[in-house]
Length: 250
Image 1 (tube, rainbow, N blue to C red):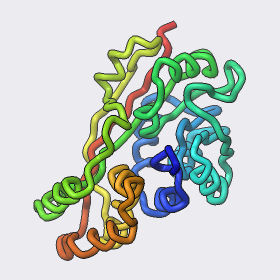
Image 2: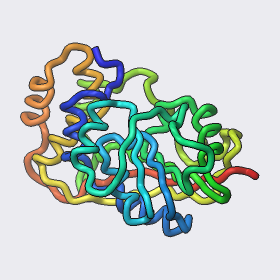
Image 3: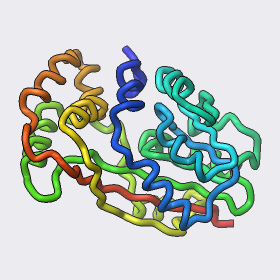
Image 4: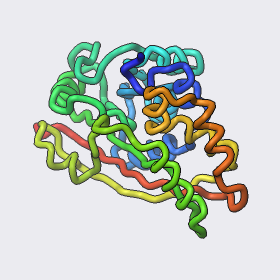
């Protein structure tokens, strides 16, 4: 069995085609404040959506990913970005290789002291790390129909135990690992979604990956989602998340 919950062909294809269009919006907000650019390494790039979002802000954008199936999908879909295999704790690059590192929801799964040690090594002077993440979209702006359904969804298919660390600007700021939070924002924003796209999006969530690893058929999960999900009321789905700009102390 694959030990990486996101390291399957189905999950990588889902990440490439059925994830909310948030990366570009977040990266733009963070990079405008950071004055980012130059050469950027996207750590834990998944199927490459986050690396594509970095592209407009970088002279060179490199996505790095440990899951082979995700990397294959990223390379197949990437237009101008580079993609390499690697782990956050052992970055396969020389000292001073990048101006910025970005990490979209990937640091929750890594050894943070090892990563920030490596970040300090591969970053150039005045370089920094942009960390960001967003929670699953679980409610509409004006009614509770989706929120009530999402609660039932999580009760039926619970999240995996202890696979991800909780991170936010406050936690990142208290790590004392050689980097400080220079600026951060917590946000809520709406993304228009149709019912079919939302169904496919839910199939990429970590609780679904966990259920499949425990032997529940993907077709059974998708069938339950299709049968129970609200039919009416589709429009904006709200997402909450954060971004943080971090720089080395020295």
